[in-house]
Length: 168
Ligand code: ATP
Ligand code: MG
Image 1 (cartoon, rainbow, N blue to C red):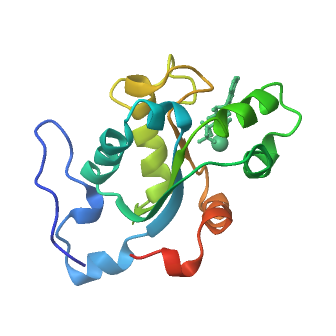
Image 2 (image 1 turned 180 degrees about the vertical axis):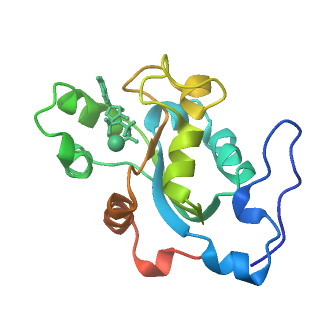
């Protein structure tokens, strides 16, 4: 593993993925991938770099990334699991309203770590210092998406990326 870690930041824990570990410890680490999206409210306010910085400082590596705009049909397919929920139509309109950044993040316990960094769905309930607490506009326009399990992460990554686009 590379030791080209970002320098530690005062007041923030060192990224776990970038820690210097012995060979035995490295073998036990659960390196995972998760699908992250910088949503249209965040790209509109030019927050992509600020959000990526949060991930990289905590040791998540951006191993694939592209800027796209979803059609309503594509947004509907991505959020199919929420079909029938009262916010489904509005969510589709929002997610197809402007450019998004889709990205694959890799690191130790990436799914859980990413959910920790982004905070609760509702920014009013998100822990201070999380992306949603600091940047989200509302429960809908909440700046980022993060997969909620490694199984869903694999499906969501395959929805947006082919193998050749992922470069660890
Ligand atoms: P995401 O899946 O985007 O990472 P999440 O897992 O925290 O967010 P979900 O319950 O999966 O939340 O909802 C998906 C998205 O739908 C939310 O991120 C938000 O944009 C929108 N959403 C969820 N609940 C509501 C609601 N009550 N009102 C409006 N929009 C909502
Ligand atoms: Mg979700």
